[in-house]
Length: 226
Image (cartoon, rainbow, N blue to C red; front, side, top):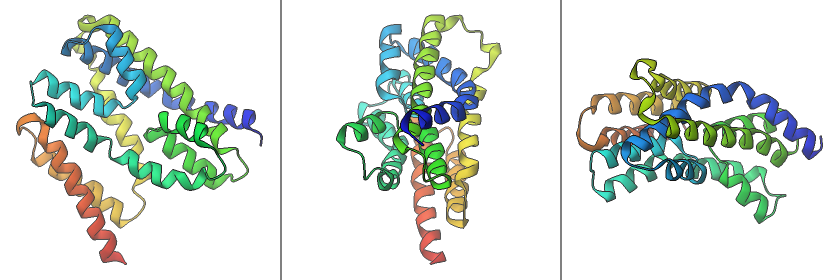
């Protein structure tokens, strides 16, 4: 399968996920404006970072006047999974040069990683970069457009719409297929339990505690199993 055909396959496969991406992006745009960003800066941030969970977590901390070190640390911890994604996905990119790797890294998020790894494993004949771009570019364009809509609407979005419901749904949809064995189940369960138990402590530090607890628990479970 050539690169163009693979791109089309990726764009077609990711189409259902774009719907769930819209309210998430709108929430980030609205939150950015309420935090104090002007609409242009809010859209630029989404275009450059392309990391919704980290953006939301960091903006909430900025709104609470948290120390800058806490804001930065939170962003790093929330995005730490991308390091693991990169290490895993690099084995599929041995035939691609630095330019392709740079472009692929720019569009690396949960959905592009999960869909591309699954597809390449199932259909080795597919062009990895073409399929990846077919998934990533529509997601990026939808994300930036939705953020722009949220930034323009700003406080005009009624609270009764409860758009925030889309955020946990997006991550639950990604979590379910990621739980493949006892180690990942333990990591997800412990991380979620600790994060909930620590709800209410200052600066959303429960998020950091839950993430660290999940990583440690998953690592221990993995060593125990082997």
